[in-house]
Image (cartoon, rainbow, N blue to C red; front, side, top):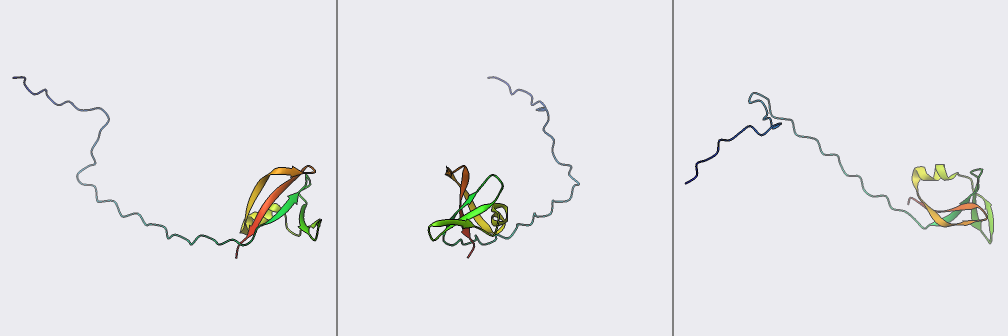
Length: 94
């Protein structure tokens, strides 16, 4: 019969001191409801950061920049470019 091997200290493992107070429970952050977005529309942005919206068969200047739209809208860059302008799909919050 083989004897038991002596247990050795397994490097690096340390136990907490016996006199330490228990850790306070961590507060759980409240979940915020997911935003609801409306109907998407397409904007174009040129190299000078001017934006254009397609209205009535023509591209007309849009009042807000893409950076301003990102603050309260869902903005997605689309793959194709039109006349060296980047297309974006913008969905405002309802």
